[in-house]
Amino acid sequence: MAETHIPLIDLRAQRERLRPRVDRAIARVLDRGQFVLGSEVEELEERLAALAGVEAAVTCSSGTDALLMVLLEAGIGPGDAVFVPAFTFISTAGAVVLAGATPVLVDIQPDTYLLDAASLERAVDAVRRTDLEAAAVIPVDLFGQPADYEAIGAVAREHGLLVLCDAGQSFGAGRDGRRVGGFGDATATSFFPTKPLGCYGDGGAVLTRDRERAARLRALRVHGCPGEGDDCARVGINGRLDTLQAAVLLEKLALFEEELAARRRVAQRYQKALDGCVETPRVAAGAESAWAAYTVKHPDRDRLARELAQRSIGCRVYYPKPLHHHTAYRERSVIAVDLGASESAAGRVLSLPMHPYLSAAEQDRVIETVRAAGKG
Ligand SMILES: *Cc1c(COP(=O)(O)O)cnc(C)c1O
Image: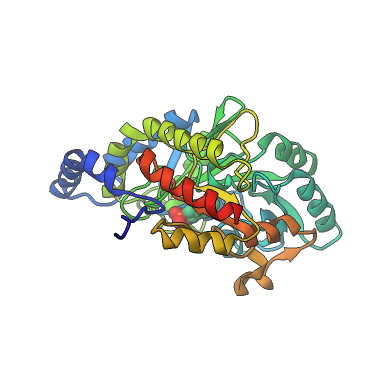
């Protein structure tokens, strides 16, 4: 008998839980007839800022636009070097190139997949010997765990770099008693449907402790114009959030803390059962991951993926290539340091089913399959 499919990420259980509330919220927006920005967006921004413990949240059309707005607001452009991990989602570097700046690739820590501060230090030293201006670093909270902001912050302070955080996978996560959004100068996050907090389309936000920065970001979100009829002092983008997406996110926020706890329980169970048979993800002391993905490492990753597929278990490689192996970034990024840990991770990682509604029975099937394949 064919086994039922276990998806990598399952959005249906949450849809069922929220069906009447979300359907009513959507109907309210449609009946009122305002579709871009508006009261739901304002309420959402207050709730996001409160949850992250920061002064302001500026929502926008996607996580990528959030990154781009942060870079534009900081005045980063041609001639500037922006340090990014080589092992990340493509848009971390895409936003840098779109802003006109140059991504300088930095290696990761092999066990957390997070940007390595020692590698950053070496990359900054190398850039100092070029014509580029070392302007900013974008630490990425890969798979949901906040980057090592203490170590990165120390390097950034020493060299005068802005710390612009890519929290595309980590809204709700924390480290050393602080939540994502409170680290660095500004933090970009994403509400793409499969992220820990996802809407039903594209969406994102910038979190910051600086209200004036937030005001400038609000102008950049609407073509750079502070208000209708005002002078456009800067060139901005069309980066607004749809009212419908804000209405959906407000309903989902009601379950968010509970869902984060459920993800944590799933991760702990994986960790206990899989330790020693595959390399399980390391969470730093004092860090709380949002568990956007549960990613293991295995020397024969492709065989592990085949065995999972055979038992109808969803899995995926995030990410099969480091940035500099992509055609668009081969020439546009600078490689000044060894990227061995990024290369090695790309060849060995595999993400297993992870979502708040993964049942114990489903998880047992995943564990059993991984353990069997891990031995062989
Ligand atoms: C998803 C993601 C982004 C981009 O978010 P979008 O909303 O898809 O544009 C950026 N960085 C990381 C690390 C992400 O996971």
